[in-house]
Image (cartoon, rainbow, N blue to C red; front, side, top):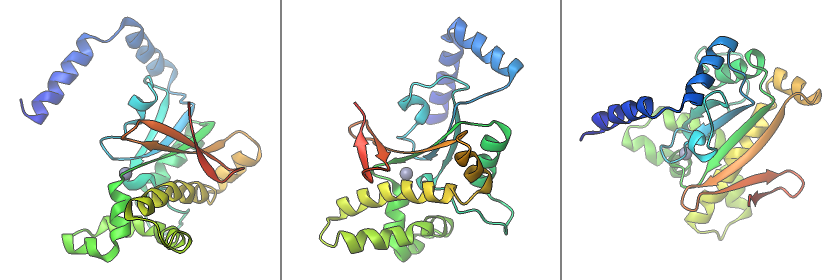
Length: 212
Ligand SMILES: [Zn+2]
């Protein structure tokens, strides 16, 4: 069975096995509209599916996925700001009370950032430009962990990418405003795809703590 056939078979199984309450939930969500309690910014990586990781139901998560789970800083110029548009919709349109940046281990986007100019040889144009927003975080990691192995450097960059996105979220005035009146909270999480371990960023310690 090829990949597309497998997807269609999966779709038929999804419809056939859909629990009654699931169907009712979807009908309610259509009538009342969605009211997700969190927007999650995750990587497009096929091994990190937030809906699976958090056992989420339809309506639970407003999902924003891109290469390396990045939030660009607020920019007035330019037209096609996909991630910023999704955030605007989540915050202004849906009033999500939580935004979670979900980083992950073994991220191809972060690896491309570490390889730097080398990836342009493979014909990449958009990925290097996109992940270049992590360049200063990468330099910081190299300066503070000069003896780290490649693997350790990559893990540190992946966790730092979460912090860069959290920082960039605060450049949007409607996010800052809602944070100050406590109607919106930001969260930095990190998922190790090999061990399926989730870690949560603790602003007090400045580290990521594993979740039991
Ligand atoms: Zn990734």
